[in-house]
Amino acid sequence: MKAAFESYLRQQTQLDEAGVRRVSSLAISRKLRRNEFLLREGEVCRHKTFIVNGLLRTYSVTPDGNEHILSFSPENTWTLEVESYDRQAPSRSHIDAIEPGEVLQWLKADFNGLLEEIPQLKILAEQMVSRSIHSSRQRIITTLSATPEQKYEDFVQTYPGLLPRLPLRMIAGYLGVSLKTLTRLRHAQMLR
Picture 1 (spheres, rainbow, N blue to C red):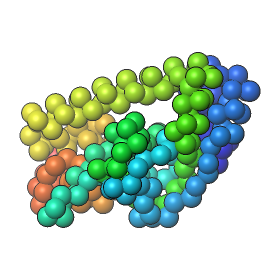
Picture 2 (spheres, rainbow, N blue to C red):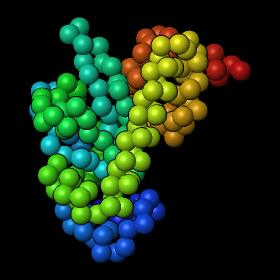
Picture 3 (tube, one colour):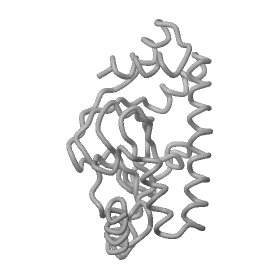
C-alpha cells in the first residue's frame, strides 16, 4: 500500500528517497469496507487521508434525510473534513467508502511536523490547497448559475472516470438535482 503512495510522492514532488520514506513512515494503513465510515458527523477529524485505492465521498445529511455530497475522493487524492481538522471541532459532514479501498492516514500533529521538516511536502500541500480552493469556487459558480443540463455536462467532463463507479442517486446528490431530473438528463444525452 505504501509503495503506491511513495510512487505518487515521487511524481508530485522533488523529495529525495529519505524524504519519501520519512513521510511514508508516519502513515497509518487502513482498509475500508464498502459503506464503512472514515468519519461521522459529530466526530473530530484527526487525520489527513490519502486514498491509495477505492472511492470515498464527503457529504452531509439534512434533517429530512436528503444527502448533499460535497466531494468524491478517488485513488491518488486526499480527503479530510477541513473545518473539523483545522479547528479540532466536531465535523458537520460524514466521510465514507463508496467502494472497498485502502487509505493512508497521518495524525494532525505528525503531518504538521512533516510540513515543518520537509519543505517539498509543504509546497505540495500548498498546491493541493490552492487546487481545492479553485475547484470549490468553480463548483459554487456552476451550482449557482448553471442549468441542470449544464451541471450534468460539467460533471461528465470533469469526472468521466467516476460515472460508471457511482450510483445515480449519488451523482444527483452531488449535482443538487432530483434523481428524476438526472434520469431525464441521462436519457436525453443517450438520444443525442
